[in-house]
Image 1 (cartoon, rainbow, N blue to C red):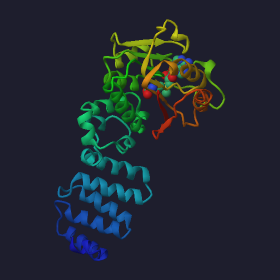
Image 2 (image 1 turned 180 degrees about the horizontal axis):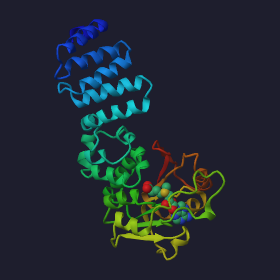
Image 3 (image 1 turned 180 degrees about the vertical axis):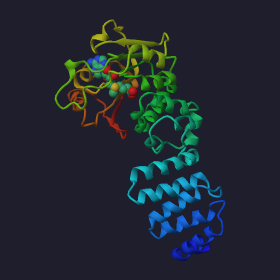
Image 4 (image 1 turned 30 degrees about the vertical axis):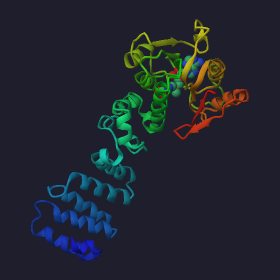
Length: 327
Ligand SMILES: C[S@@+](CC[C@H](N)C(=O)[O-])C[C@H]1O[C@@H](n2cnc3c(N)ncnc32)[C@H](O)[C@@H]1O
């Protein structure tokens, strides 16, 4: 160990290998041999010794996974190595990244490494955040690489409610209900209007340049209701938007509107309908504003914003959500 700490790696390697010959029940010497071999850049040897060390008990599974992962990674097996290192991080994760144990088992490794706000602040403000994280990725793992948006939605919606901004809530683009469920859970006392075909994009809206047209079919109104809930304050409006605005109250006022429909036609119709109906201090969140995969979103915004008094702030989430607070 001393030779290793002094960076006399060759000597450390020979000593450790010698010790393994004396019987290395707990795997300690094999681990040291592996570490020295790593330092010498002898990755094959490192891998062999770390594997050997696994048979003993002296070194924790965590240390071994991390070391083996590193050896594999450096030896060019990047995917296998990264996965092993992430497995080790899993074991350390809670303290290190502030990751909720509930969310741990639910999605891709990248989810675990996403930046989060300081947890001891958020844990007080959002005791249910571990459940929100789980809901955010439920049946929709790609949401796991957009944790910033989850925190943005949760934090700002909660503030609107605390500030008493009057009005209902609305979302256009519900898909499986991941964002809708968070919105409803933060403000269950407010009416939440949910607009979607619940069957993917209507063909008539798709334009050349739109990213993927064969998506969002794998859902249904019933599945979303099972997940988000059935409650008087949850008002589902299935079908083609803006047709599904039929019957809305002429006096409707909104405190929070989340537009996440990806394509130009419904986005333009939604901006025309919702903007004038948002209360002062209310929020309009336009997802995919900066996303080149869905150019219709920025185009719809560009056509409308010259009539708006307010500026937009863009959140650096996965696809650049643009946000406006109504004057
Ligand atoms: C990106 S998904 C919504 C994701 C959801 N907000 C979330 O965070 O999980 C986009 C949704 O917009 C819906 N959509 C797009 N155009 C629509 C239209 N004209 N009328 C109704 N729904 C539409 C699609 O059916 C799809 O479910």
